[in-house]
Length: 167
Length: 275
Image 1 (cartoon, rainbow over the protein chains, first blue to last red):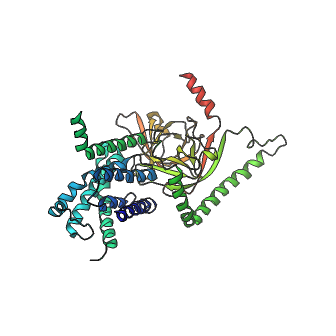
Image 2: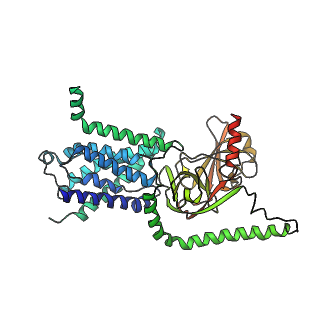
Image 3: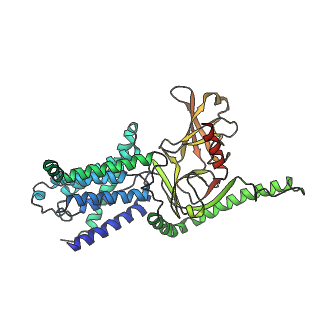
């Protein structure tokens, strides 16, 4: 229990620092940035206190917002994917989730990809809709979601592979 | 009563989600309206401190470029100085730079710059303790950068001119036709000067310079902004929208100057009395 709390706290701080000091400055092709910090929400233990989890995600988003002066856009996107995570888990892992035996680091690659993609796409759509905040710029929102989304998904998968313990 | 409590307990995660989501949307809306984004700002000691220590490391990579910009500016100022001293070298000459000056300048370093989002902000390493206030203009040696929005003791955040909420009064250099400088979020190199009256048509030439207008108390008149690269009439055919290529490279801002108009309060008082 204690081990899990420490692990997640360190992950929280490290992901925020990596996001604001490194990844927010990539600006590939002018505007494409990966949002790796959602890995905190992706990897949070499956057996959890749901309210606490949603609140922590809100805090994560708000911290990123504070660093990037963006109002509350990251916070809104984060609470939404935290709330929708059980549904995404169920869709991606099926029966394994019902038995509460999902281990994201060791799960099948395809299920993992589906799970991360669902969360990343929802997160990015909400993030960019609120950031642009203008219904006449739908194309811009979709463009940003697509390119940044692909970047985020690839980086998330790579990070999970890199930091997972070998079987 | 029992039922209400039961309902709340059963749906607690959904209700919590709804509450937090609404809260973040409120923060977002506040950040889109001028001068209301007080709560969530990077101008505080924690985020400012972290950006400052990271800036202390990364600033070395840009030293060569910064030196070139400084030398260029020195060169321009020296030219100005030697050319004016010849005409003003009589005995009745008094140095008017030391008293009765209208503007106070404060140098500052940019410790964070963003240009990929639609609401771009900058963070500088000077704040209330250095005598800065809300609504002061920020410029570089080449042109304008933005306006101070939030302050803490040692840091202030600046709403950049490439921010879709930014609106700055600007005009053509050779005539006094003025308009509002806005950004259409497309490219960090170009901004748009909108609401320029149709009658300005005869004076519009591609390559003309756009400068700040003297109609606000924030910027002094005549600070360079950019160059006209194109213009077209809006849908109602009454006003021109002018494409302006910025002199500043907004993706690479190192050192800036904050301009304070000492008479701003007096002017604001006068204007308020009118209403």
